[in-house]
Structure formats: structure tokens, C-alpha cells
Image (tube, rainbow, N blue to C red):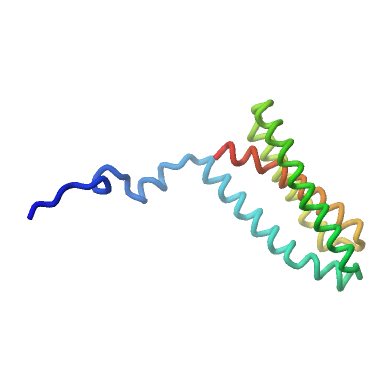
Length: 139
């Protein structure tokens, strides 16, 4: 019995060759994004507990802080996409967004009031909004 060659035989690249053919910029962006996401999840998953137990914030206050932060990220994404397309400076905008978010990470454990947490969370989400569209366009 003779076997017909399929589309999957020799024409498709091996996974090993595909991984090594990715540009260095994609690898760097991937690892930066991964580490930023890990650090954000570590902090933001415990932040409501920290605000409630250590800072004595009410559930309503915690909800407002989180709601304003997420709304800020969503609104900023719209403008960063337009600015990214207009300026064509995607690397610069992505670096600015990652930089803003990275600067806020040490503020959370040092915060002694809800105002500090709110400010850090606000700037962190602005950074997330700024970096989203340019990062996606770069990839």
C-alpha cells in the first residue's frame, strides 16, 4: 500500500527550528511581559486583603479603588493605540508603560494609607494601558 504525502510531512517547519527563528525582540518582549504579569498578579491578588486588614479600608473603598484602576487601564488603552499609530513610536510607548508599572511595585508594600495605594494603582494601570496596544502591534 502506497502512502500519499500529506501537507504535514516535510513542508512544515519543526518546532525546534520555529522557536529559534523568532526575533530577539519578541523573546525580550515576551519575558518582560511575563515577569511584569507575575509581579502584578502577586501584588494585586493580595492588595484587597492588605487594604482591608492593614489599612482598614471598607469594602466600598476597595471596590472604588479597583474599579477606578481598571477603568483607567481600559480608557488609556484607547488613547495609547491612537497615539502609537500616529507617532509610530511603539517601542518607546511600550517601554514607558512597563517603566511606569515597574516603578509602582515597591510602593504597594510601603503604603501607609489608601491614598498611596490608590495613587500607585492608578499609575500602574496607566502604565498597563499605555503598553498594551504598542506591545500588541510590535508582536
